[in-house]
Image (cartoon, rainbow, N blue to C red; front, side, top):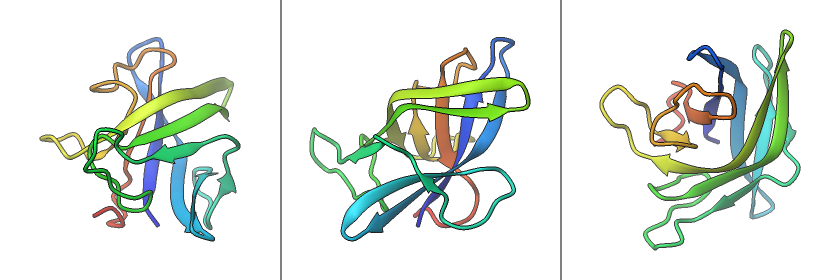
Length: 128
């Protein structure tokens, strides 16, 4: 089960770790769940979230994605302190590039603007 750090961009150019996205196959179908920081387990399913194999071919699977695969978060919100982060739209899976870990990115790199987000390898070693 891959686990990704979910990060949201802030207006001041920084980013905030907002928890984890956990991807699993439940009954043969992709399940995309959210797990808050410091929590354990498989998380809570994100309503409307979907995984799509690369529409241009050479796609992977939800639990073993390839570059170009798509993760869609359907306007999912997470509140950290007094700030609410909204995760909306498609993020494209990218391989590791230098110091940038492989994972799903809303933009080529997280520009740390409000509304930008990514979910990259959380270092658990579960992403191959």
